[in-house]
Length: 303
Image 1 (cartoon, helix red, strand yellow):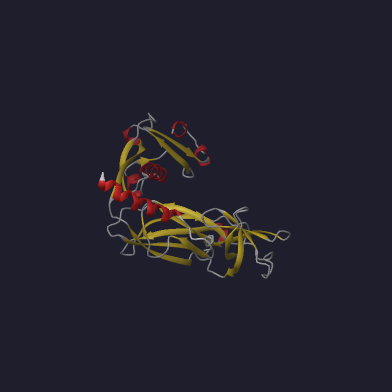
Image 2: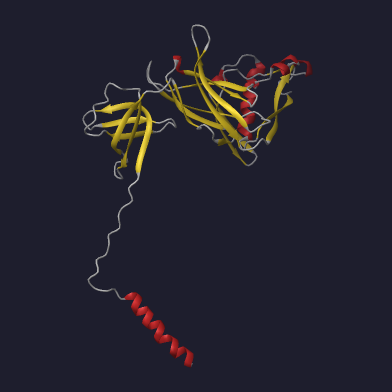
């Protein structure tokens, strides 16, 4: 009991000291945290009355920027690349522009991934393009410089001569070395020469792989008589968590030249594309674009 009575006054005194505020000392106000926002994209619209510009980003989003009062009107710069920075208005979510500048860049601008980045598969690519017929090409080169994957993508430019955002994904092939290069380019409509090549050196997180089967028909094995008779061929790609989507995209690509020479064939139209894939438990629901409806023949209809 003696120890309790000795400690309690000390605790009580400390408590009073903590709760008592010395009168007359001012309380410093808490300064709000102000974060400067930056947006880089294509000037897509301008409202002269409100002084608000509409900017489309490479990821498909749209930002509204209140144009600085001292800056000249951007009304004649539609489709140009612009960079703006300022503070976001919490009420309107607009960026109150403090600085704006138009950037003169090449025909192709890759925003993501950045050079030297460590990436996984599928590789997400975003940027802007001002290219003929809104079409650009891409390819992946391994450490030896050999092309191991290639394809094309479209920009979403509003008009000829304007930049448009693009975004696409690449399921990377199996690579023996982590280092590889992504190139985005165009080909001349006159002579087919390479133009506007943008090179992005990258590093794959791991050289591990994912292997799965896709199924094609084979006339010599009875597919013509029975459309349900399909036969497995193996595919190996860079390790990915999106194996289902990778498998469907490989299916849409059809047999390789070597497999076609062996008699494998596909009944899926070449222009068919995958919109989305949802996997729930053991059920997968794939949504294809209108290209899948371009069918002919009983086996194609069945497929």
